[in-house]
Amino acid sequence: MAKILFLADLHGNMVATEAMDKEIKKIQPDDIWFLGDAAGKGPEGHKTVDWVRKNCKHFISGNWDVELVEASRSDDPNPYIKEFYWKQLGKERLDWLDSIPNEDEVTISGINFRLFHGRPVDKNYHTYLSMDEYRTGFTDTKGKLHGGFISADCHTPYIREMDLGYAINTGSVGNSLGVPRCHALIIEGELGAEELSPISFNILSIPYDNERAVEVVDEYPDMPDKEAYKREILTGVYRGMK
Image (tube, rainbow, N blue to C red; front, side, top):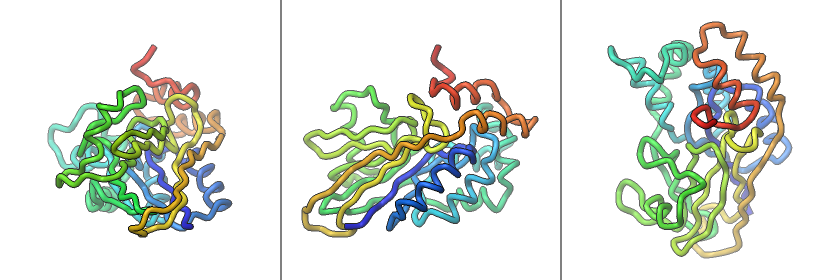
């Protein structure tokens, strides 16, 4: 059986990414998928983008990746996507982010999974949605129905089973909401096999030095929305919530 790791939402948090990197070296997955949002929100997007490019084998873009590229090329950018983030990345990294697809698929133990971040190709499939609200996630943008989907975007990991198959979220490496740790998904099964066979799903949860991650923010005086970001890193509470 192959061990496949799916991770996403590093969001410029290199302290958390380094904790994930150490765990990856221990578990030694056979394949690593990146499911979007390498940069934005956190202070070291240039470093987390470079880590993704070096360590992952397959890549999908997320809403921040797309919007950072768009903001860098626009005379009227999205006010939420501050220039600190895309200027830090530079043209070569932005061109790379622009080159990766928004959606893909992989077959494991006879189950074909749709892989996407959430936005911009679909909605953000939050943990609190009903089973009926997950149904649209199983069909890709070309109209193909899959036996499961693996997304990110909501920053909270989950594995849910329903009549169509499995609705799964990787959680976030660098900006987890809920429990403020690094999260990723590990699937163990027969990679590429069309015949149904046993498959295992596990959420990887790794503690990291959240206080150090907050200290790093102050090393970047031009970073916007510092206090909101710090709060998320320390508490796992989204900035829009009380």
